[in-house]
Amino acid sequence: MKPQPHVTHRPAWEAGVSLIELLVGLAIGAIVSVAAVSSFGSTRSASATVGDSTRLQQDAAMAFRTIGHHIRQAGAVRLIDNGPGLVTFAESFVGYGNASAPQAIQGIDGANDAPDALGISHDSEVSLNAVDCLGQNVANDVAIRNNFELDILNQSLRCLGSGNSAPGPLIAGVEDFQVRYGRRINGNLQYQDASAGWTADDWNSVEAVMVCLRLAGQVGGHAGQANASGCNGQVFPLDGRIRRVFVRVFSLRNIAL
Image (cartoon, rainbow, N blue to C red):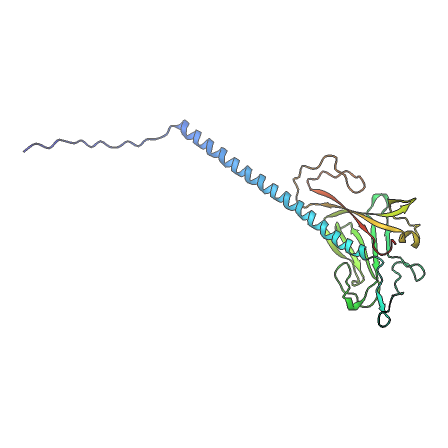
């Protein structure tokens, strides 16, 4: 019988790290954590900026859609059925004028670059479910009047329509509302500010309306825009909010004939 070899079991030693290796690992982990947090913050800020800018675009589009809808109807007069094949235009429409001088549009120029006001009127008919600028139905066959203005205190564009007793907001975040009127002078279409001295004939010579809106975002932290200016050339305040200027021109289809 052969003797069994004697096996000696030695304890396994656990490998460790030195203090320097531990510090290096902690430093790398800290750098990765800071980079991740910084990336998250930048992504969140960029996302908020894009969202704010998109909201301004959508609000401006909605305001222009409402204003343009009524400008294109300015001066429209309903037809009266006078029997088979016979119609006449209603003679009751006066708008902002009177029976001898109907006026479909009017405006007020804000002094010293203050916001303007715009009034638009057209005939209506209850049977057609005509609505005002706030979507409210009118009660009678009367001229619809829509008066647009800026609520400076609340920074909102608001409108008073014939279906309401008080103005209501259309969009928020509006800092300026400027309106200019295109009139044919010496054969050339020129855009002018409203004048208190204009007569009904002057207003009825308006062929187009130029509307400018300056909107401000809600999110801060924006770097600002160099040399950016508003509707009347005012420099944007650098308070960290996004600002956009939107301009649209609308033709009057019913009175510039």
